[in-house]
Image 1 (cartoon, rainbow, N blue to C red):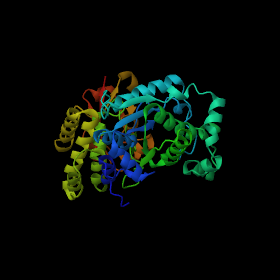
Image 2 (tube, one colour; image 1 turned 120 degrees about the vertical axis):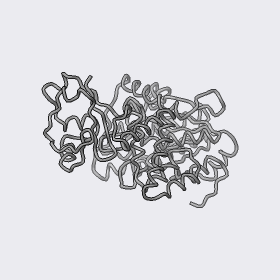
Image 3 (tube, rainbow, N blue to C red; image 1 turned 180 degrees about the vertical axis):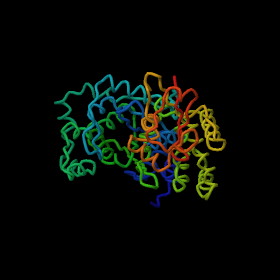
Image 4 (cartoon, rainbow, N blue to C red; image 1 turned 45 degrees about the vertical axis):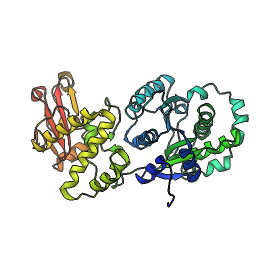
Length: 416
């Protein structure tokens, strides 16, 4: 792509590696240069927290605000009742209103760390699409909105076609999702003057639908911009580890574990992640990403510190680094490690070390825990753990127990 942007936001998206595609480079760039552009990303409330895979979209909204525009975080209180079928092999479980509201309450906590929700012209808005979706009249919606959608065109979208090509069921409920998301863009434009939808590249079809619908119904010019769907250099989906998702809420993934996830970034990903997930200058990201050998570890610590500070605060980042230094350099037991608290009743006459590895998040299953031990990858209080049949009793936890999986992942086990 050789387009040379005039606006600061487009420049950031291109130079830092966010941009995958845009519906109209010149038109959007002109709008961004002319004044404050309201732009949104939708987040369905399928869990009580977002995970690291959503962080690229959150950073896009943060940069949008930092470059003089107005972010809208749209909670999918309505669309979550349907479920996004994009590139899924099966239908999402349906949630009731209470579960959706609880999930939204959990997700809201994250955004305040990244966005300013003040009354300023660029102050962010937190909205819920249940506001206009919950009370839709079905017949009116079919007549006024449904008539603008071609089934032939909808079947051609990759998110739908991939399911049908694999001969996997796609319910009528899910098929309606893309119409509802398109309607979101229409309503946001009508109610709040929203001109831009941001999202991952898997949302391209949904974004284009919204733009087309808004042009047909309101005759307004609006835009879409997508980011890359990130995988790590070794092919893993961003935000996933052997122990599960890396959540953004501190009650689900402790700040130290969050810090450690970024510290464990592969050498090949370090420079790219510095550009996407920190606000360090491009020159500094390039310099750090070019380091080699043992020096790249210093860049990874900076990455972990900067990303953790944005979400959890600078003090939490510094505490995590201090804990890591104590664990790695001094062989000690830091106060800020992920901690598994067990009661004497839970342990009973003994709890297998394999179970404890799983419960502490260091292994995804008992089978993986046993393989880790057999491969000499587990340590107990910094000594090699060789007995997969070891039973941990309450008296063994008179002092906290330090468990390690490999050289970089650690947890404390305590008796409470």
